[in-house]
Image (cartoon, rainbow, N blue to C red; front, side):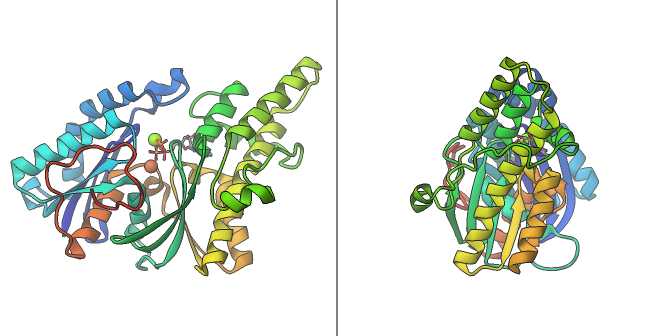
Length: 346
Ligand code: ATP
Ligand code: MG
Ligand code: FE
């Protein structure tokens, strides 16, 4: 089926078009620059930006795909989780389009959409299930056990405080680096020693592992970095920002992959799929490959344009729902900022 996907859960307005599992268009308009001076995504600013970007992105996506609106078989939209005001813009646009064109509408889960991105791989191989999926972005850090994309997704764990990307952004800020912090820390860390400072790995102690085996925590790490920097500054030491960045990055990446690989081993699932903007991190990619090779786990990383928020992954998940014979959503659904990952379709 020819499916149009709309994504507005955070700061990317994404319109994607797929035919089955073939990618035809993936237009992304980000309001990231507008949030830079606030050091994080401002919901109200993001929502307004979606409103402005929506129509041009739609026109562009149809042109890129070389299709006309009336040819589309179904529309898919992210209904949650995400920022309520941002989600509402996409949901309203999708409902209006569905009513105007008389097409079926599928309200889908953003996080499962990230997993759905894997069906769009252009090497011809199909998504291999079951898989463990590690989704790491500015708003989420989630570990999933996916047995079936349209009917069986289990949440193994998630962050109990900051998301991994958020931790990168906050630590970058305290090191005096601009927003978004992830790419900045990555750049600075390249010249540093990851073993210079031993920062804490959240929820890795034996007592935490009982209740939070697959959960993450990054606020303690952020505080540890802040304390360390303060102490050095007070002492007047000429410390290396590169060492701090490299050691911090290592702490985040180490715990992410330790828990993800543990989930693969515990569940007897020799596959790990990565998704979310933090996958752009050079060390995440490197260590993921190293750890997966060592444990005999097949690693899958979609191209970056499909890892960060985008409409194509939403279209892809919509197409999977259509192909599985699922009924469209009734138009009374609403944006749900806390939609649980087990609810694949709203
Ligand atoms: P959501 O959480 O809803 O997916 P988001 O907009 O926060 O939305 P993305 O756009 O996927 O998520 O990712 C943005 C985050 O990724 C930011 O926190 C940014 O700092 C982080 N990031 C980007 N590049 C890197 C990198 N090289 N290393 C680490 N983090 C990075
Ligand atoms: Mg974003
Ligand atoms: Fe996302």
